[in-house]
Amino acid sequence: MGRVVTFVSLTNVLSPESTFTCDALVDTGAAYTTLPNAWRGRLGSLRVLEKVEVETADQSIIEGEICGPVEIKIEGFRSILTEVLFIDMEPDNGSYDPLIGYTTLELAHAAVDMVGHRLINIKRVDLK
Image (tube, rainbow, N blue to C red):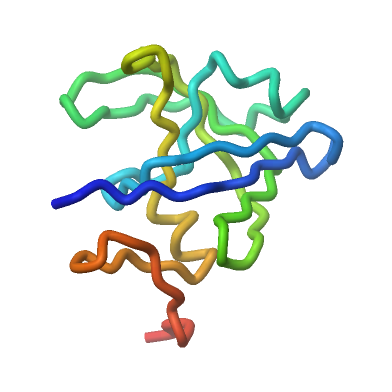
């Protein structure tokens, strides 16, 4: 499977001047939009909603903090109000790989096109 990377904008809802943009890896196995602790100051002061244990892709267990409220805008999709997860990340070749998780994708009405390796708009909201 190929990598799907998308451009996103993140804004602290309670402090709109605290905003930044980045490319993020779409990870349908991750629940939350996940950011490195090293970037925490970019969103100013956020409320810590919960401290959680996180199981990573290599099955190690680390600690993280769910913080919010944050507005997330995936390029080409509607803005959503949600939470983000901050964890300690190791940079890969000097840069971080923030993640866009499945809850963010669902709220933004975005789905992964596995053939085209891109995000597509969901036409209907599922109430089944």
